Amino acid sequence: LHVIATELKKASIEFAPFDTIIREKGFSRFAQTTQALFKVVGISDLVLRDYAIEEISPTTIKRVMTGDGKADKKAVETAVRRYLNLSDDFIFISDDESDACAVILTHLVEKKIIEKRG
Image (cartoon, rainbow, N blue to C red; front, side):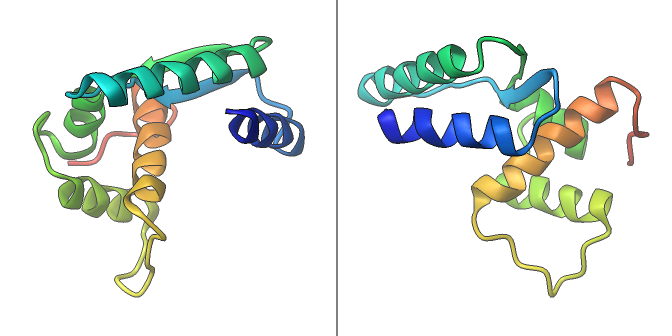
């Protein structure tokens, strides 16, 4: 948790100025994982307490990005690639990276900063 807090603080300094944090709303099917996620969310809430925090549910992200609230990760990644005009040669480091892009793209679509693509 200390490492997470330290890295969040560094990122908040490096990437400032911003006034809102956009994150995917956490969920888990398993009690132990849920408890760990609550701890991380608590740390991020503490470190980023000076910022507004908006959460977007995974279902909303999938629906906005693909048109289907139950879409799989590959469909979401494909939608992210379409929004960002990424070639097939571009490789995301992990699902987390493409998911993070989907979160911010969803926020931008919902705030009507960019247009939804079908």
